[in-house]
Length: 548
Image (cartoon, rainbow, N blue to C red; front, top):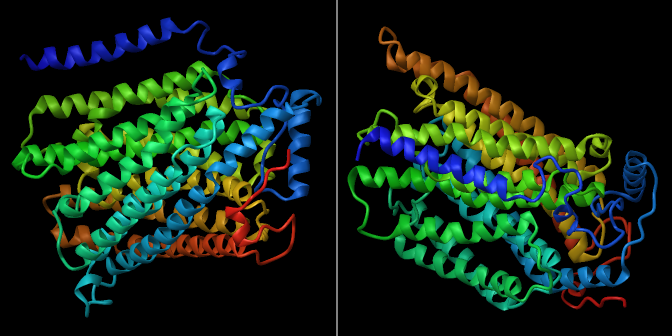
């Protein structure tokens, strides 16, 4: 088939599909009265803030800011619907708690491995006595602990909490998800052990041997079952956009994982194409939908205001679904792959600006007049910064796909900085905010030390800023040095050393932030610290009673 025809047909098909979608909407894209965005609130609840991570004083200031922006008060939520919401929370409490505990453990494991790997880039003789501590293995342990430990446990735990709320139905079949989570974590322990022992499939993001990956597949299927059962037995007709994102993430992941890990199918150049098809799509079609779904739920709930344009949120969803599937091909620029595949990837990378712009405009319009809420809401601070990082990482990724930019940044630290901007600056920040919101709801107790939340935010924000700027600068200088034939290769290595040390300092600050978060999490669970609200003992988490 003619290359031009392939590219033109792909572009026209995507563009026409978007036009049909827009045409199918009953109201305009910027309609300010879209009722679809109001389904996350009980009747007469709009205007009432919900921020369990804030102190009483912060909650009062947040509510005052919301009342001032809305021009007065008047919310009187329907009591029956609030009770139904509480029952939905109770049905998910023990399960979400287990997911979040696993997420915190894997966050600490990934942090330790990542900082070790970072230091080894400028101190290569440090910790070389054990094979599993060498850079090639410890860096891979870090990647897999994040990709299959921290991020999915936090994201899926959040989905378990949000979906029953949105469907106004208690979670059904939680035991399947418990069994699946246990199997998933057992597989990850075995996978990290195999990587430490030097047993690997040798593909980035897919290093864990396929025999172990069968446990991931079975565990993931069991985790998805309760969400499917709850969706089928829902008590609402309209599906809020967060349900679309989360449901499709649960559909896209098994398709990606099974296709990528099928043994003996992919060989040679096809294997490389599959590798980056999976590597990019697991970020864009699994972690990203879970994080965006969290933003679209928690941001309106915190400020007591529906998202400004519900149709823009749907445009963002369908734009992501249409355009993201082939963007991973730009990692193979210059490789022995068909040129049309690379060009298609670049075109789709640039088209991703459409859903990103839809999300950014929607987030800005929703927060307009309520930006002061960022001062009072821990959840909103993390989620707001995470949303900004989604915009930044997506625009940077689109520009990085261009051949002229890729010629400098390919095979450099610049790409590593970009990957962290997406998976940490965006996804992890959003999940931090979600966990700060959810944990008080399932433990029936407020966070005991607000200053630890502040410390966590500024440590990870400042540390990540230093990390990202250092690596981005190092990568650009490294790429320019490698393109200059008159300069020896070792010069491209030496020029990065000061910035790699800056990366380690930034990483150390991030690790301190993670330790503060984990310590606060443990104090909340074990009921230590000031009694800022009715205490919830550890055993009471699994025996809560709802007031009528």
